[in-house]
Image (cartoon, rainbow, N blue to C red; front, side, top):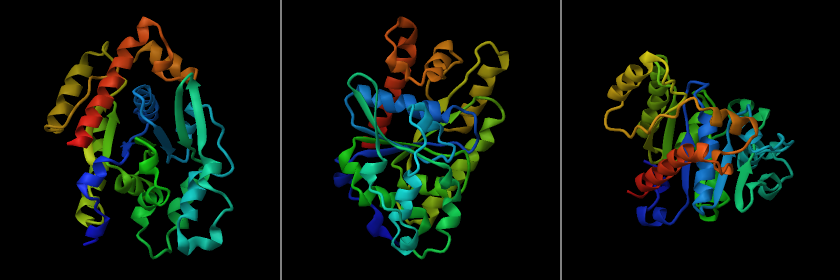
Length: 286
């Protein structure tokens, strides 16, 4: 069923990859991870597009971009023929923001806005598959052929926006805080992935691994909590934990990636994100 939606693997190898960072639980550093991962790819010479799919717009703000009047929500609505009465007179070139946080490092951004919170209600009455709106949008504008990597920051929910992201992505990274409260959030988002697989309307995104974040090495229970969570994750990749480093807080406060800084105190964080990009690339090519 709907097998025509599945791409030929040989063709897919030459296309840009769509990577989403997802967790149903908020406060796990998902946006921070997406921001620094995008810069890690850019530092490797990749052409990167970031999609902010969270109505809160924190990903957009990290790029020091003000929430615009027209944003990704309006482009998505414009891509749906059945909603012609709601179309805005804008082009994708009007919405994409060209960012350059450091010399020679360019990342394009499709910003979010509060209107995204009404996305599910807006598209409720259409006949086209509502789960595939974002996927079709990416195809319509041939974004995979224009970018090497598309990084999506999704909302901490389980609604239609999340389903659209999962249907559009080649692979998912799961940031989480390694404590006993995080396991359920991971299970919830993975159940949605399972549901998408069972619907057979598109290929299932690959599990690119889990990112333990905000790991508090001073807390005795932290290591055992992480070990217990790892046991539930089977053979999936679990990245080296990101600790509560002062450098992270400093870079976020200044709306800069960890790659912006040349001092030795940032080298370890830069190494972790570089290793992650290499692992993601290898997983998506296999």
